[in-house]
Each structure stands twice: as structure tokens, then as C-alpha cells.
Image 1 (cartoon, one colour):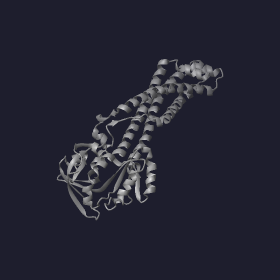
Image 2 (cartoon, rainbow, N blue to C red):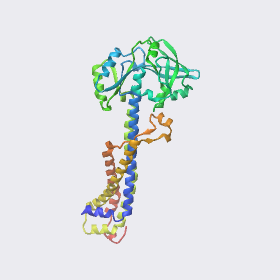
Image 3 (cartoon, rainbow, N blue to C red):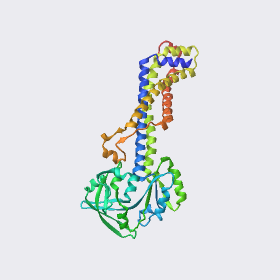
Image 4 (tube, rainbow, N blue to C red):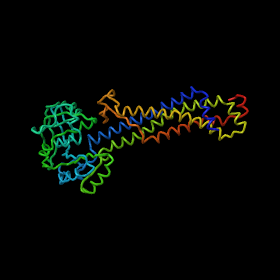
Length: 406
């Protein structure tokens, strides 16, 4: 009986109830849209970190990353590289010679990380070839070519064909320099990284480092993201003498950003529903005041306070839940559309987006993993919204209520 009364009561004033239901639907849609956008942005950032920056896993000498000293190369690197490529979960693996140094031109100098690569292998491992916006890929017939990021090129006033000098220390600790010519300028979704990294061929770099055919780093791309823990464990067992790191350890700021954004998305969802709660409270309070005589009559006839409270609670829950499916449906449809076509944020500025490590096109994803959390927030909102109107109803005195007094 209480259920039937509650359902009928919310339709006494249809327009007011429909407005509240639509408000809840719009609020829920807004919350889902924010969650979907954040999930898409984080997925894009993770993909950029893995596919174009750090890979899934990296292998180094245990001492190399302490000071990036050139002498700490991977012992038996070719054998290790070949063994890694044979692992079933590995899609590709590429070697790199890495050192810290200075880039100098006639206009100034800047500290950079110099990456010595085998071009064809690196193009597959980090999509370097696809990032080129000016110039051409490395020419095997030419020596001492270099690729630099757009932000660094703008800072140092460099263009394709410009000459520059790279200075760093070799394996003996002696300072060495080499004159290089800019073969290409690349641009990724992470401008700060572009400013710090330059690429040369491993052959040219090793000749200056005097490291021969050895290298400092192996970057792995796996067939599936979920395989990272398993493959890392295999590598630790097979190569205990090396430092094995996953992308979360290599780029802890990205992992922290993902975790922080998950927490922030729930906070924003809570704020949206908290704001909607005031609309629900206002509606329910008006409904209670309009039915003062009726509630007074119910109390006078022996209806206990629990049933009065339950009546108000059910009306609030019905109002809230009636708008919930509509909000979820609209959110799912909008998210599904933009997950296929992409959401173009280039209006915010490509430079600004890349400065934070994001692409200008984001593909939102429906937050199915957060669905239970969202429904819990909605349910809590309904419970809290009914408290003040319910207390108002419970405080009504039958005699005063029947006389029409507040």
C-alpha cells in the first residue's frame, strides 16, 4: 500500500515531477560525460606513454639509470635482445644507446637526452616515423644526422638542414663532441618530452661513446597491456642481473595521474548529485506542505512515524530512479558516438594539449567499471534528499495539520 501511495503521490503534480526527473537525468548525463571524458583522456595518455614513449617494459643495467654513465651497457645485449623477442607475449623489442648531454647552436645551448637508435626498429617501437612533421627519415648513406622535437627546434631556432653540436662523455669519462645536421623535426603528443629528447643513429652515437655494438636500453612493446606483470616476471626470472621496469615505474607521474583522475571523477560526480539534491529537497518539501492536512489525517488515524518516513523516502527514491535510466541512456548514446568519431579538442590549442601530454582528439569511453559507484552515489543522494522533508512531515502535529496550519 505504501508503495502504491508513493507512486501516485509523485504524479499529483506531473509537471513538477517531470522537471525534477529531467534534472536528475541531465545531472547524471553530465556526470557520466565527465567520467567518460576523463577515462578517454587517461586511456589516451597511457597509450601515448606506452606506444610512443616508454613502451610496456624497459631493460637496463642495474647501475645505468643512477647517473646515465655510458659504460653501463647491457652485457651480452644481442643475446638478451634475441631471447626477449622470442617470448610469446612480446610484439617488438628495440635497442637504444642513451646518454645525457648538451645540444649547442649559434643561438645557445640546452640539456638533452640523446637516443642512439636503429631506425627501422625504433620506428616500430615508438612511432618516431609517424611523428615527423618536417624533413625525412634517417638516410643510411649519410652520417651524423639528428631528429629533434618541434618545441626544441623552436627554442633553439633550428630547422631541417641546420647544424648543431652534441657534447657528452664517453665510456672513459672524456668529453666528446660531434657535429650533426637536422634531418627531421618531429612532434608528439608530449611537448615537454619533445624538448628533452633527440635521436641519432646508434652507429654514429656508439662511435663517439666508444661502446662498439653494445647498447644501454631495450624497450619492449607487448601484444596485450594485461600481459605486463606476467612478462615482467618472466624477464626477472630469466635475467635477474638486469633492471626490469614496467611503464608504471618508468613513468610514475602517468600512473599517479590516472589514480588521481579516478578519484577526482568521483568527487565531481558527487558534487553534481549534491547540487541536484537541493532540487529534490525543494520538490519534496513543497509536496509535504501541500499535503499537510492529508498527512495530519494519516497520523490522526494511527499511521505510525515509520510509515510516514517510508512514504517520503519512497517518493524521493521514485523521483530519483525515474530519471536515472534516461540519464544513463543519453550518456551511453553520446559516449558511444564520440568513442567512434572522437572528440576534437583542438579548439583548446594543440600546443596547450601537448604541453600536458594529450592528443587533441580524445575518444571518451563509457565508464562501465564505475557504474556501481555511480549508482551508489545516486542512491545516497536519494536517501539524503528525503531526510529534511521527512523530518518536516514527522514534526507535524495532527490537530494543527488538520486546521491547515504549517
